[in-house]
Length: 132
Image (tube, rainbow, N blue to C red; front, side, top):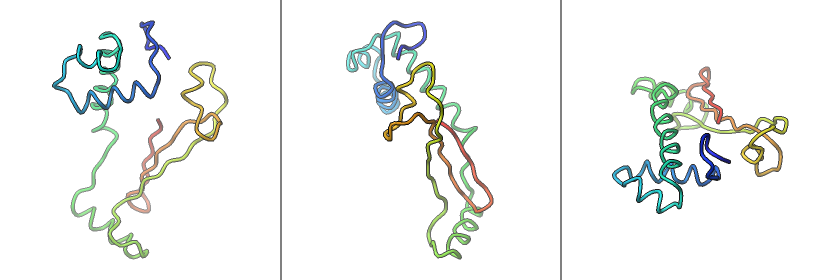
């Protein structure tokens, strides 16, 4: 796919790889990263903007349990023969019609179009969900 306003094509895998590498090596210069991944600095800038956006979004979509909640959650799981568990995470694919644009990004390993949903269960009555 092309990042908006740029003619350079970047695969979703490369985009994620660059984002993760940049997040782990922030002291590196843009020139060094763009050379390493053979992309322009303008493309890198756009990828990094998404990395920062997701980083800033994290506190709003993630809630960590406090110590008292962890004890209560672990007790609930222990009572169901799952000792030492304070949460469960899983994902699923929700089938969608073939998108008009960027089809390859939605084609999963089982060869149907879908969006991925990640679900975390913290206590039996509290479920959070995020879609990717």
